[in-house]
Image (cartoon, rainbow, N blue to C red):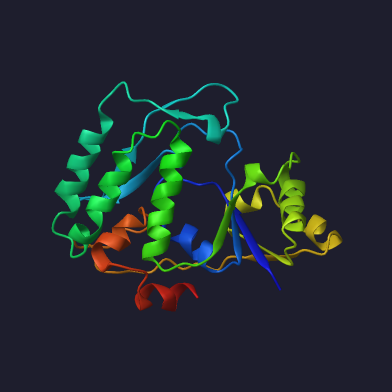
Length: 229
C-alpha cells in the first residue's frame, strides 16, 4: 500500500508539516498553485521571550501569480533584521550553534524565487529529522485539474492507494470524500497532537517554525514521536 501526501512548500514549516511527510511514502510539494498574500508561503513564527515573532520574506506578488513564479524582493535588506531576531532569541539554545550556520548559508544564497528558498530550508530540516520520504513537485506531474479531482489525479499518477490529508479546514477545503471512494483511493486524516518540549523561555508556545524544535532539541526526538505516531 502506497501513501501519498500533498502540501504547499511553505516557509520554515511547523511540525505538523514534517509529521505528515514522515508518515507517507511520497510527498508532493504543491508548487504550481496561486501565491497567497499573508499566508504561510513566505512567513512563519519564531519564539521570543514574551511569545512569538513573525519572520516574513518580502516578495513581489501580482494577481494570479503562481507560487513557483513568485520572486523575493531584495529592495530592502530584510535578512539583517531576521538574522538579529534569530540571534537574539536563539543564541542560547542548546543546538543553535550546530545548525545556525547552515540556515544562514541558505538565506545568503539570494534565491530569485521564494519556492527555492523554502525547498532548501525544508530539505535541511528533513535531513536533520532523519525523514527519508521521497519528494516531488506537482508541476512535474503535468496535472491541470483543481480541487478534489486534482488530488485524486495526483494519487493516480503516483499509483497511490492512500491519500493522507490534514484534519483541519485547509486540508478538508479541497476534499470531497465521495470522489475518493469512487476512485478507489483510501482517504486518511492526519492525527497530529502537538508535542511540548523545552524551549528557550518558560511557558511553551506551540505552532512555531520547526527550527524552534531543531535549535532547542537538536532533532526529531522521541518526545515528538510519542505524540505524533
